[in-house]
Length: 317
Image (cartoon, rainbow, N blue to C red):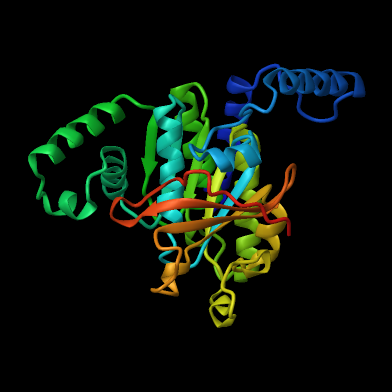
């Protein structure tokens, strides 16, 4: 643990010098802060509602958030089978296809499986056919098309299990040096991380992990999308739509997150629902914007979320 901490500190110092030379660490005077604020407002004014962060590929969500903002910790939470990994990978795929540099830490799903999901999504090929190798002629055409689209993208996957925040930061720095900076980091999922401190209270451990992910977002100056589990107590409620309080070991996660997105698909609980193939994205928290809900289409055999033709609805909480 001590050697890992020393290595992490040394690497952080080197990264700070090489990647952030000239940036201001420590206290800043109000003149320079005001200059930055004025420049920021001028840019926003000129963009007139355009996406100022990393676009998710979902128009309604991008309108609400202006994209995923630099240095933000974005928590995506859902109960099992709702599609939180698919949602995050769809966002990562869209960013990569927009020539952004993306790093995915997948502690649950092997890297090869993520790539197959992306090929399925991009090529619109049934995942079962991909897994079995049972591809028809038109599947092969779409398969080779998807592979050629993904080739040479700045997309990195680390599927090491039980990473600590320190190791994650170290690996992110290495990729950032290779690519000239990262535009998006995805972590799947938060509760599978560890701090490296034996016998630590789990709530304290989650707090440290949550703070570490926010620190990672600030250091890399890019959004970090961290997936999170939800407490199963919500299953006992008549309305099973998640709330901020349902975040597992929630206090620190809710506090550290700049944006909290919940995924809810009614058909997981009600087979005869009118909302078959529909997912609700609930914005439970947005530090610099509105909360509310929107709907997306979810195609299960492609594990793909897509815009739903203008069926957005606004709910002010």
